[in-house]
Length: 262
Image 1 (cartoon, rainbow, N blue to C red):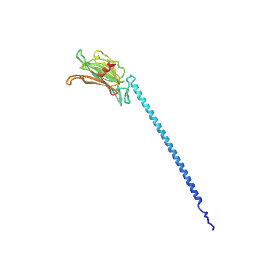
Image 2: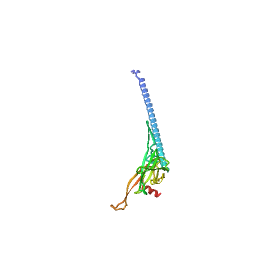
Image 3: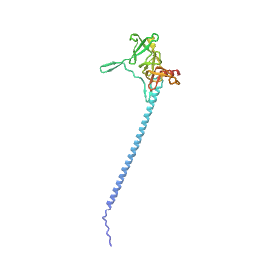
Image 4: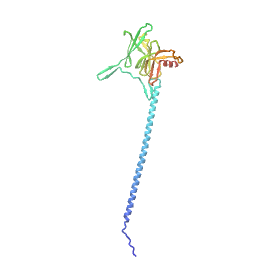
C-alpha cells in the first residue's frame, strides 16, 4: 500500500525560530558581559578614589602635625614671644591704638593710671600719674595729694609696646613695684619708691615663667603655721599674681621661690 508523505510540513520556520533564539541569547550574553565589565570598572575607580582621599587626609594630618610642632618649637626658643595654648599660639598682647578713624571722626585714646606713694621719711602722700598712648608712655608726673605737680619724669629702659601697667604688690608695708606687661608677653618693672628719688626712672626685666597676659593686684592673703592650733592667729597681707596665657599663674611668693631656686 502506498504511503502518503506530507512534504508541506513547516520545517524552515522551526529552524528560523531556533536561530532567532540563539541570536537573542548571544545578545543577552554580550549585554551581561558589558554590564559586568562596567561594574568592575566603576568598582576599581571607586577604590582608587577612596585610596586617593585617604592619602590626601594623611598628608593633611602630617601638615597639621608639622605646624603644631613648629608652634611648640617657636614657643620654646627662649624668645617668650609665643606660647602654645591647645592648638593656638598667642604671639602678642593687644595694643590699643593711639588714634582711630570712623567716618568724619578721629578718636584719640589715652590710658591713665595713678599710683599712690607714701613717703616713709616725711610721712607725706604722693601720686605718680602715667599716661599710655599707642603702647608708649606719653606723660609721667609726680603730684602731691592736693594735685600739686612736684615734677615731671621719664621712664627709661622700655623699647617695646606696653599692653598694661599696674601694681605688683606684696607684704604689709612699703611701696610696691610697678610692672609693665609688654606686647611680647615680657614684663618690665621699677620700685615705686624710685619715683620719689629721681626724675629719670629706670626699669628692669622681671624674670617670669611664661607669656604674661595680665596682673591681678591686691589679693588678700592670710598666712598661718601648718601645725597651728585652731584658735592660733596668723598674719594677713596683700599680694599680687601674674597670669600666663596657658591659664597658669605665679603669685609674688611663687616668683620669689622660683628665682631663689635658680
